[in-house]
Length: 234
Image 1 (cartoon, rainbow, N blue to C red):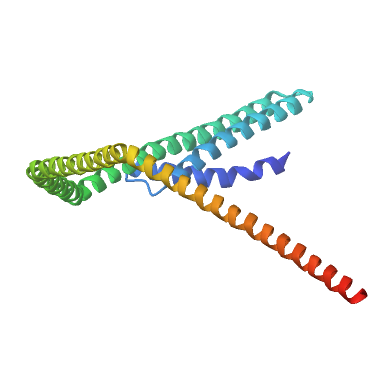
Image 2 (cartoon, helix red, strand yellow):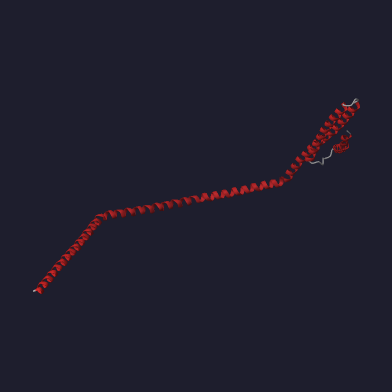
């Protein structure tokens, strides 16, 4: 039973420090995380006080005379809850103050960074204007060059059309010449065929005559050989 009361001195010391800081109404030295931890710790101590009071109340009710026991337990509970509530309030106040200081620090940083930010923005604007000026100059240059390029394209197309017309006319003249020379070419072709046929005919005639000559000579030779054989036999 007395062991549960050992937390009271530590709790009282913590609450005293928090209360002293609250009374000074100075800027809290707690960070936002520490303030939250203080508020959470106050809630935990309050829950512990309620749980301890419930246990002590049950223990008192088991005694025959419980009036003084209940009063003491309730007094200890009220004291612990009051101190825990004070700790929670201090934690919440420190949280609010830490958030306020954080907001003020961010605002101060924004204000301190404002000249550099404005300088960057001005530099960006100047850079944008310079790029736009360069684009405008480029557009004007292209607009000035466009008529010359258009005329150059027109001249190129005219030259291509003229060259194509020349090729067409040349091909037409060649085809007309070929058509004009077709009868003469046909006559010459027929003449060449006729001359070739005559040459073949002459060659065949000479071959026939040569074959007849050979045949006649062979017959004469055979007759001569027969006459010589007959004379030799007489």
